[in-house]
Amino acid sequence: MKSTHYPAFLDEARLWSIIAQESAPEPARIRDVLAKARQGGGLGLEEAAALLAPMPEDCLEELYATALTLKEQVYGKRMVLFAPLYVSNLCANRCAYCAFSADNTDLTRKSLTPEEIAAEVRIIEKMGHKRIMAVYGEHPDWGAEAVAESIRTIYSVTSPPSGEIRRVNVNAAPLDSAGFALLKQAGIGTYQCFQETYHRGTYETIHLGGAKKDYDWRLFAMHRAQEGGLDDVGLGVLFGLFDHRFEVLALLRHAETLEDLYGAGPHTVSFPRIEPAQNSLLSRNPPNAISDPVFKRIIAVVRLALPYTGMIITSREKPALKRELLRLGISQLSAASRTSPGGYAEAVADKPEAQQFQMSDERGLGEIIGELQKDGYLPSFCTSCYRKGRTGEHFMGFARNAFIHNFCEPNALTTYYEYLSDYADEGIFKAGAECIREKIDALPDEAARRSMLGLIKRIDEGERDLCV
Ligand code: SAM
Ligand code: SF4
Image 1 (cartoon, protein in one colour):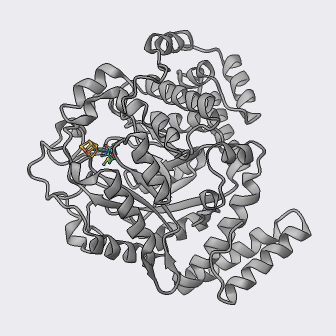
Image 2 (cartoon, rainbow, N blue to C red):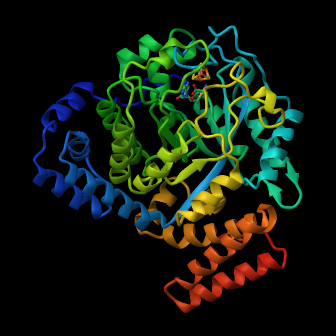
Image 3 (cartoon, helix red, strand yellow):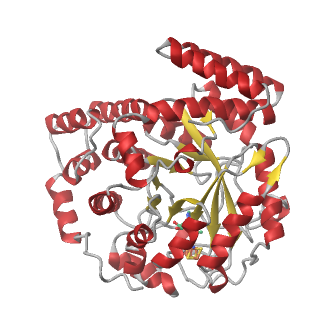
């Protein structure tokens, strides 16, 4: 099915005009925008543009403080964790920034068999993960049916003591709506697809060949997903390819159009920044490299503009910066990642010759959890929303009324306690159980405290997967 029947929603001239008009906002304008953001209703494109412009240090501090306040209002202290699972690095496309490009003849190519997928899943489960992001190159071997089958394989694997994957998200090439319907039937959580750059001219010059050259096919992927009944979608930009102000406004416009048409914006937004990739000159010298301060600004502005959207950061970023980004709006983290097919089962397979890009965070899950806990976060393995039907329009309904607080925090407490009971060493268990006790004591009413203590007792007695 061609995507031409959808109405155009990106007007490049309009985005440039907004950027020009908001290029030097007065501090009073910035403070007005921040005051509006604090109300939690999101921001328009003009307001977001004003926050992306140069501003005095005190305004910047206020912007960062507002992002943190808003994030904690919506999500509390919980931080969702997941593991990527690279299923195949076969790719027929020629993206100039990616090691999986068909042009890269030095890459060790591999597609996992069902048995190899199962082996990877068992290792991921043994770490304590409950949520996987499955990743695929674009290749005729990995059409909708094959991706759906791999999702089913992932769900079918269980391992002691309580290993099971409860949510499989997918990052794969765009499909037609019938293909998306197949993924939905297989139980997909979020379908994620990054536009890479919303700037059509740049898109065309860096996508050198293959189906991905078709900008519009990708741009309307989420429209087709919705048509196929898949209402839980994740957007993203590969930062470093083009002007970040243009990209952020285009991303927000994309979110806005999905909300207008389907009643729900993106469930998540991801923030990949180009990392060095094998045989990719462009990845080593990105045309619009994004500095850490600019990256921080982007994350804070998106948090204010889309207060109810999950924001994801991966092992592409270094631990120290990640820590700062958590305070600016990030709500989901990949942890203990491998970025090559088979990289969990065989550490040696996870070498540059097979990886998608070089990682900047090589820590194990226990270490990441220890640090999150020390910083006052509540690690969460929750997968409740899509299993309870809180997706798309329904999810937005809950979030808008700040109900998310009533789900996220209790589910983070139970899933984290499960993790501690089944997978943590003694030190982490003790500190984690103490932290859970404090969070329960701090709950505002007696009924909520009693109910949480009841759930913890049931976990102690051996029950699992207690979510609301
Ligand atoms: N092949 C599918 C596609 O292109 O949509 C999905 C898999 S692809 C490996 C997932 C994402 O990796 C891409 O959308 C791109 O944003 C990101 N990526 C590619 N090369 C990268 C690099 N050098 N550094 C960081 N992220 C990269
Ligand atoms: Fe293939 Fe995706 Fe990498 Fe492009 S970004 S080369 S489509 S895996």
